[in-house]
Image (cartoon, rainbow, N blue to C red; front, side, top):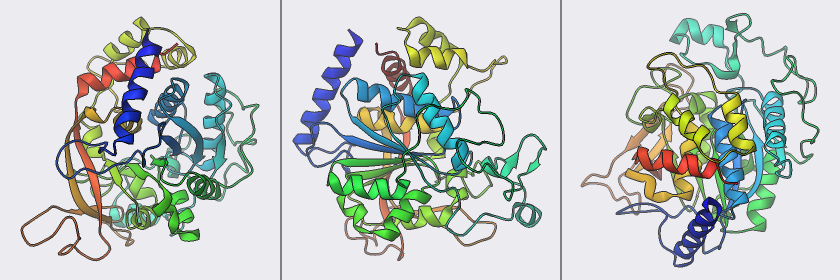
Length: 386
């Protein structure tokens, strides 16, 4: 029954796309999902770890692919939460565990365009970030020595949580896969980047027409109107490689959608959601999630950052409040590194032509709120497809 329902949703989504309607709510809307392709195609660029928000987002895309709602073309790994060898093993092994080893994984880079940060110096000058991702070593409770790192995804410094995958990573570099695939399906491929976007920037540097041929790009990142979760200025994804984000935001995409940290703070994963998932149909995905759920203390909840990205792509009516703004990221080294800077519409600028906005800023649709109840309904239904 649920599987039939999701096929119906896929058909409805396809009709909307074929009519050329916007994927997003009200007013000056932008289309992310392509130029009439009956089934959207997706590349997922991620700094994935185990059973974190990246992983659940990947599971949702795999389930949507299984239901015929989209074509999941591949995973590309980047730095952020972890380094690329760890992210690659995590992606490969978790795809195996849910029976989707057929989805290819391509290794990208974890080195930011401006090089790795000197965290000890920056910590002294600008303060230690609240979250440091791959820069932090929880074993020593100190900044990681990045000269000592896993040589590759088959030889990690620490044994992987669920062992090594039998499925190998692809030989092609992530940025080359992105370029080849987008050009192969012009106007059909949406890129979801939920990490640092370094792979996207490298692809754009190699061939700027990537942006022209993509259906669009969706980011999870940035703190638009609230303090950062890494530093007071910056959200972690955009802090990790601000220059890559700056270059990507400035590219000539047909459409850009941003799911910022502002929104993530409003959506809470609670024990009650796990209870609902446990009561739903059980499959390899739900079993893996439930077997690895953490123990909650009274009143605890988790944020689900990246999980919102596939949700609003597949079910755009979840979006309640969106705003078009012109946006960039401060990539200048210093206390504001990674800060998102955005401009609203006002009477002396023009949202359509860009007149009156600063040079280097580009237009994006930003999601500030979603229907949380409907989001969790969709989350449960999609993950529990047979």
